[in-house]
Amino acid sequence: MHPAPSVIVFTALSGLGFGLFMWLGLGFPGFTGMAAFGSYFIAYAFSVGGLLASTYHLANRKNAIYSFSQWQTSWLSREGILAVVTLLVFAPVAIAQIFFQSDAWNWLGPIGSALALATVFATSMIYTQLKTIPRWNMPLTPVLFLLYAVAGGALLAMQAKVAGVLILILVALQWAAWMMGDRRFADTGTTKGTATGLDRIGTVTTFESAHTARNYILDEMVHIVGRKHSEKLRMISTIFLGVIPVLMLLLLPANMFVAILALVSHLVGVFASRWLFFAEAEHVVGTYYARG
Amino acid sequence: MTKMPATTAKKLGLVIDLDTCVGCHGCVTACKGWNTQNYGAPLSDIDAYGADPEGTFLNRVFSYNVQPDDGGAAQTIHFPKSCLHCEDAPCVTVCPTGASYKRAEDGIVLVNEDRCIGCGLCAWSCPYGARELDQDAGVMKKCTLCVDRIYNENLPEEDREPACVRTCPSNARHFGDFADPDSAVSKLVAERGGIDLMPEQGTRPVNQYLPPRPKDTLDKTPPPQLQTVATEAKGFLGWLDKALDALPGGEKTETAKERL
Image (cartoon, rainbow over all chains, first blue to last red):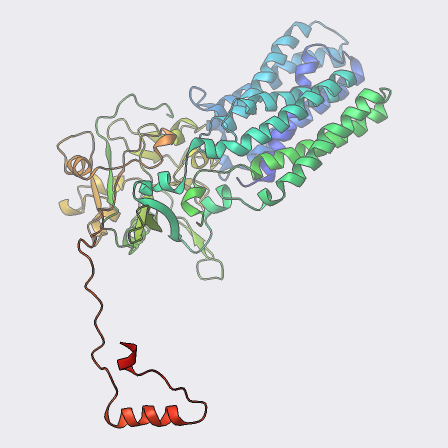
């Protein structure tokens, strides 16, 4: 799949933003006043920024309001609704904590936390539901999205030791997903033969493509450039996503400087792995185009 | 609405005969022509007269080479591909706006361009590459089964079928109702063993493809090779042959008679 910057920024940032909301709703780090303002500013900036980035993926934004209408069948619609509801639910909690040093609305926090997790789950299901992209179409995909959010959120909520442990689990599961993902396409049994129905005659190869120019399908779904460097990018992602932050969080004394460095490294890793998430994903429509 | 209708009264669709398709791309051109001037936004071309032209098409014809496993002669098969109007269409349920829908009355899958946001998720969910986002209009385009022809009473009766079917010079495309077991398309599919594309995707396509019929095979051994009749060169050529052999460097070749 084409690794469009808009969807990479969307899933990475909004995931971290809602991950931070999850911790804020449960009372971590438990700030009030200006410090609380800082936490909520980051949570809103990441989640809203990510959602705004996603609208750059739309070719016809003027109809965007309709995307809240099909929650009965569409994960994309559910994600939009859950995101807006989550952001609204946290508004009174944040206002009370920041401006009135009050915990009067804190009872809404756990509900907001659950909604934040539900939002991330809905985001993950936009991708997981697609049978056409076998690498995404497995139960580990939503688990990973949730873990990215909760681990990154813990880092943003300055829960250093918890974040360190969660990131360790995240890296292990990310590697499991990469290795399982590598086998997914073959497991579905889709080949040029089943795509054309000509496997009942013999071995199918492409004689001539349907078009000499590129088109939307090729640009969007038959992205192959990224796959060449996937091994290297997996290593780079692992180092920035996990190794550096975990060493810093678990071995160094907890302070602001360590937390920020660990966060920057983790962010670089999240973007690299999310780029790979798209770039490595093979769409079954590629079987119509593939040579050989 | 993106909820799928429980059943559709009709199941309109196409039969594509891979045995008779000659790969002329006439259906591609007829489709582009009709659908640029009728339902919805025109099918745009980008950089049409430049170095890197591309455009939106609802129907495209691939060509494949198939080598039979028994070592028989390879076949070239032309393969037109457009929306299959699936009974379990994933492109409908993923749509967040309700722009993508399947009609309860005849099973046609359509896009309401006044609701489409151009997110592309429906195209991602389609295994067949049947949907293309128009780069100019920013809305998703797909085969409408020429919904503006098949019910169009302003057209002569023989033109009330999809443009691709109407134009096909080799009669490789057929249009009809698959819900009616006595329709011409249902009978054709039963007789020739119509196939689903990518059945493992579980989309239950309405459009059916007729596999190419087996090619003729040689049913007797080839005739024996001809025997050599000229045993020895005579006349001028015979003299030339001997004279050249006699020159230094020439070989004393065996005569045709010795060879026999």
